[in-house]
Amino acid sequence: MITPHFAVEPPPSRYIARLPSPKSAELQPRGNEQGDDRPVVNVSRVDCLGFCGKLGVSLPTEAQWEFAARGPEGRAYPWGDDWDAAKCCNADNLGPGGSTFPSGTLAQDASFCGALDLAGNVREWCGDFYRFYRDSPRVDPRTTETSPDVYTVRVEIVGNRPMVFNVPQPLARGGAWTKRGPEEFRTWRRKEITTTIPPAPAQADLGLRVGHGL
Picture 1 (cartoon, one colour):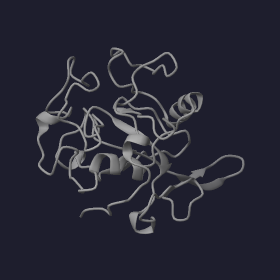
Picture 2 (tube, one colour):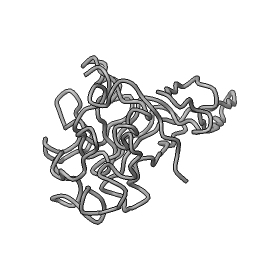
Picture 3 (cartoon, rainbow, N blue to C red):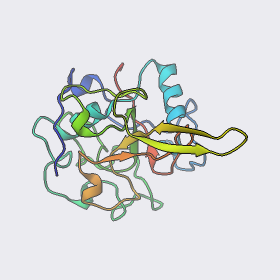
């Protein structure tokens, strides 16, 4: 089932970077031994928010990311509607060393606005939280931890004083070198990063691309 096609403002070239963020001194990944030309991984959402704050930018919202990848034509993949594993980094087309490619290597993994690596290489943190599509506005939706109907996971802590609370689930977009398609790489593919205790965990196939404020 195809998800709603969101509309966003302004144009994607104004709010999303052309490439995912690389390894850097400002965003030093834990356990990332890949080269400086590879996308940064092993960063938590808290790491990414802190990094963006220093630069005066932010993570793209889910709707911004989707529109940049999907475009006004509603493409299934950034390059079009037909799956081709050779056009992006995935488990059937791995980069040197058996994981990611240097960012921007696969020029065919390009969206209508010129953004690269949106389908493959690494998944990317979004700035908002997982919310069911049926509850989202159709134009530039933005979801915070306190938004109505944001998806949560129930957590129970048993101790001296048992507590029960709901943890909002952050989300990521895009495919990754650890996944195989075609479903995993479609532009409307969503993935909540399940966590019971904040902050959301760092993962070896999860990085970021800075958003609006560029």
